[in-house]
Image 1 (tube, rainbow, N blue to C red):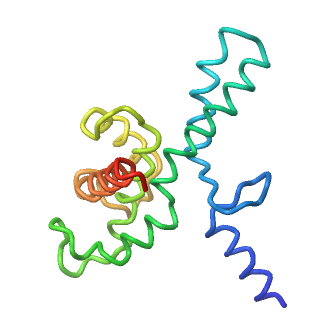
Image 2 (tube, rainbow, N blue to C red):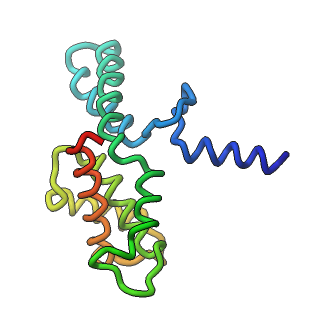
Amino acid sequence: MRDKISNNAANKKDSNRDPISGTPGAHPLGTGAGAVAGMVVGGPVGSVVGAAVGSVAGGLAGKGLAEAANPTVEENYWKASYDREPYYTKGKPYEYYAPGFRAGWEGRVRHEGRSFDDAESDLTADYDQNRNKSDPDWNEIKPAARAAWNRVEQNRNNGM
């Protein structure tokens, strides 16, 4: 019974369920980023109602962008293909590159409208603030971050 409960919890986590409705496919990064953008647009015009409407509209727009950056899909993709990348060093496991991939796909969602090069100083600061001591330095995983950023960008441009 305990295994069934933990499997259900894992499935809910892996399917990016919306925290309110429970539907799969929610993307907290995109919805949150969109909500903040919506509040900025809706805020000055009108009070709390304007902010709420702006947050909902912005959240939906952010969710649309995040569809190209589903964390489960991205992680599965990179686990299966990381060792075919030109920057791959023989013998380095997926876990070595994983923080870079994550910084790339999450950063692409957070920095809508910016290029990787324009956002790099912010990406570096975020990475350095959140990395474990055992994670590689930014310069070591920067190519992985750029590859993940580019993949999200390409998927978005192709309507995926």
